[in-house]
Image (cartoon, rainbow, N blue to C red; front, top):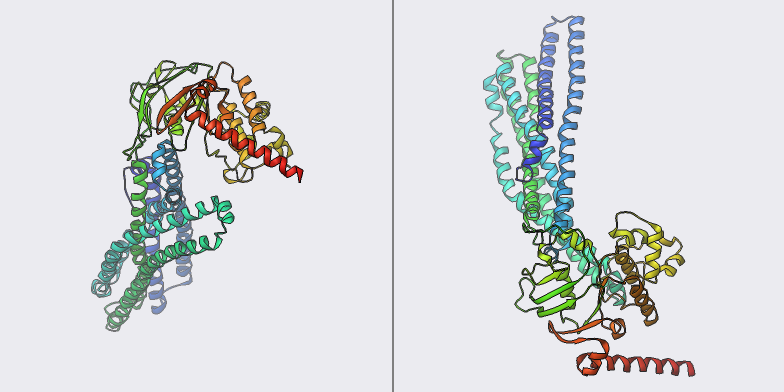
Amino acid sequence: MIFGKYLNEYYRKYFFRFLIGIIALITVDLLQIRVPIIIGNITDGIMTGKVEESYLLNKGLYLLLFGISIALGRFIWRNLIFGTSRNIEFHLRNDIFKHLEKLSQRYFNEHKTGDLMAHATNDINAVRMAIGPGLLMMVDAIVLITMVLYNMAYIVNVKLTLIAIIPFPLIIFQGFVISKFMKKRFREKQEAFASMTDMVQESFSGIRVIKAFIQERKEIEAFAKTNKNNFDKNIRLAKLRSAIDPIIRGVVGLSLILTIIYGGRLTMIGEISLGNLVAFINFLSMLVWPMMAIGMVLNVIAQGKASLDRIEKILDAKPEIFDSKSVIEVRDINGSVKINDLSFKYPDSDEYAIRNINLHIKRGQTIGIIGRTGAGKTTLINLLLRLYNIPEGKILIDGKDIMKLPLKMLRRNIGCVPQDNFLFSDTITRNIAFGVNEINMDEIIKNAKLANVHDNIIEFKEGYNTVTGERGIALSGGQKQRISIARALIKKAPILILDDAVSAVDTDTEEKILAALKEERKNKTTIIIAHRISTIKHADHIIFLDEGKIVEEGTHEELVAIDGQYNSIVKKQQLAATFEVYDEKSTKGR
C-alpha cells in the first residue's frame, strides 16, 4: 500500500470500510486454514478405520459451511476493498481535473497534453491497483503466511517446517532486488505512453495539414518510432515481471521436494502420521499464493509509487492566477477601461512583449487595435483577461484595479473571441450556449443571426444539433469564427473582445457582422483586433502597435492624415483590393 499527502485524507475518509474489509479478509483466511486440518483428520480416520459415516457426514457439513462462509467473506472484502479503491480513483481523477482547470495558461504552455492525459488515466489506475489489490495482497500474504507457518509447526512438526522453509529467503531477496528496478522501468513506461498519446492527439488534430502537405508517410514513420519506444519500455517492464512467478514457483517446488523427502522419512519412522503429512503438503500448497503475492505486492506498490509521484507533481503545482487577499466585492461592470504605463514580458523571457502602454477606453466606445504580427496585440488582451499577473494599478476597469477584482466576476463580464476560435466536439447549440447557464434557443438563434451564421447552420442536415467535430473540424474557418462570435455575444458582457475574429470571412459578411455589432453593442465597450483596415476603420479610436508600443493613435481619418505606418497599410490594402477587382473583371472578360 502506498501513502502520500493527497491519499492520506482518503484513507481517513474510508478507514472503516477498509477496516471491515480487512477483518472479512482475515476471517476468510482463518477459515481456509482449518480446511487442511479437517482433511488431515479425515485421512487419518480412514487409514485407521475408526471413522463412521456420521463422522464423515459431520465433517462434510463443516467443509460445506466453511465454503459458504468463505464465499460470503470474499464477497464482503472484495466489495469493500476493491470498491473503496474505485471510489478513491474516482475522486482522485476529479481532483486532478479540478486542479488542472485552476492552473494558469503558462502551465499548459510548458506541459504536453499527452502527458497530462497519461496522468489522468494510466497513472491513476496504477495508484488504484496499489490501494486496492495491493492492500489485499499485502494483508492476505502476511496473514496467510503467519497462520500457515504456525499450523505447520504447531499441528504437524516444527523440524519439518524449518526444513521446508529453507528456500523461502530467496523469494524475499529476489523481491527486494526486482523492486529496485521496477519503479524506474514503470516510470519510463508511463513516460513513453505519454509521448505516444501526445503524438497521436497532435497528429489527429492536425490531420488537415498532414494531408495538405502529403506527409502521411512521414507521420507514420514518426509514430512507428514513438510506438517502438513505448513497446520497448513495456517489454523491459514485462521481462522484469516475468521473472517473479518462475522464481516463486521454483522456490515452492524446492520446498515441496524437501517436504516429501524429510516428511516421508518422519512418516516412515512414525514421528508424524500420514494425515499430518497430507495436511502439511496442503498447507505448503497454500503458501504458493501468498509467496506469489509478495512479489506482486512489490511490483504493484513500486508502480503505484512511481505514478503517485507523477500525480503529486501536478497537484503540487500552484496556480499563478488567483484572487488575492485584497480582492474587493464588485457586483457589476460598466465597461470603462484605463491602462496606465503598462509594460509586460512573459515568464522566462527577457524581452518586453508590450511597453509603456497608456490607453483610456470609455464605456460604449469601440476601440480598434492594429499592428504587425508579434506587435503585442493579443498580449494586451490576455492581460485584460488576467491570464497573466501584472503589477497593481496598471489596468483599471471602472476605476478599480483588475488585480483586486474577483477573477470569476472579471471574466464573466468580458466576452472574448480568441484567434484560434476553439470549438468543442459538441452540437452548435451547446457551443454557442457554452458561456451561459441555461440553453435558450431564441437567444441562440438571435445571436447566430447577429454573427451572420444562422443561414449556414439551418442548411446543415441536423441544423443547430449538428456536431462540430473535434476543434470544429466539420466547419469552415469562417463558420467557426462566426459561431465563436455568437458564443461571445450571448453572454451580453459589458466588454467584448474580438481578436482577429472576422479574418476568415469575406468583406461583405464582415460589414454585415460589424453593422449588427454596432447596433447590438450600443453603450457597451468593444475592442477589435484586426489586420484588415476595413474591420476597424469605423472604430471610435484606433491604436497602432509596433514592437509592443503605441506608435500611432486616433480615428481612421486622423491616422490617414498622419501618413505614417497606419496609412501605409491602408494604401497597401487598397492596392491589393484594386488588383483583386481588376483580376476578377479580366477573368470575366475572357
